[in-house]
Image (cartoon, rainbow, N blue to C red; front, top):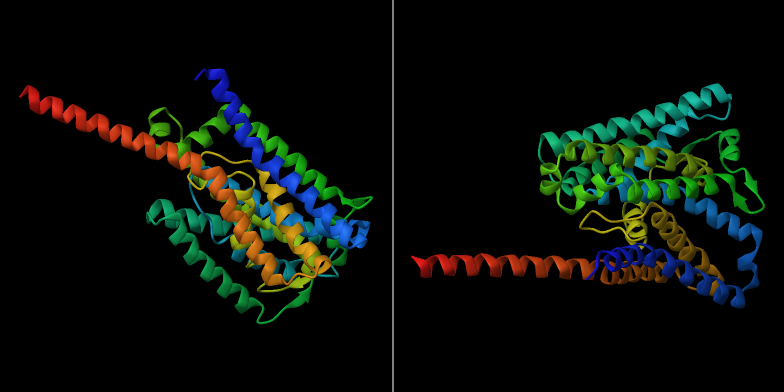
Length: 344
């Protein structure tokens, strides 16, 4: 196979998940609107985009972790803790100076959690899943300790500022999409992006080629934490209060959105724009439920099945290729051993 055709196949596999989800959203939207014309109202579409923004940010952060073959299952608990902290520092009587200071406090909390995760993984040598699962429990407990029940009104000035819109499209959503496109450009068109993908594909090989795999691994967890903090700002526009349970579902849905957007569980592949589209797709499914008369349980089942379908289509060829490479290496080693024995 020529280098050009291989490059074209890789390019196609990168954009296929995004194109497929956009097509599915168009079909699902058209069908829902035919059943209930209220679906395509400006009010419904605006609510869909507003609900998508925090999940999109969390999924983009999760993509950073998956890129270096790591998992951060503490994301849901971290966004929740950040929301709870926001209910203490982004109070209704705060001016913009105090609100900006409060946002920095929330960000610092997230950075402290990232440092804790990194210490568990790089210093204590725990697997990323086990370490972040422990962090998840700790953060969830802290959130419940700070807010036994939902409370603490968050500044309307802060939330309304984040929800400024043109037509039905929030300006912040456009900014998120632009950031995702720029991140994808960096990921596939720069040396830094190549190093990040190489780390996820084969950490040892990347290390031998001079890639600072330790730094990239640590950076990924700080990106996840920063994305979780910013995600909590937009969660506040929906929750309006410090709810100690609000962001917990993001633990799994952020991974689902990233995988639906083309991220590989084996590392080295993904798309930040795909994560945004995946988040939009997941939220669209939950949004159409009342319009179609479906139950929430049906929507959750649909999301799970679609995630499995994405894994089958996007990951299976990669898994098969690695299995074939492993079998080939085994046969080569076996043949070399047999030849050496015969020679002796």
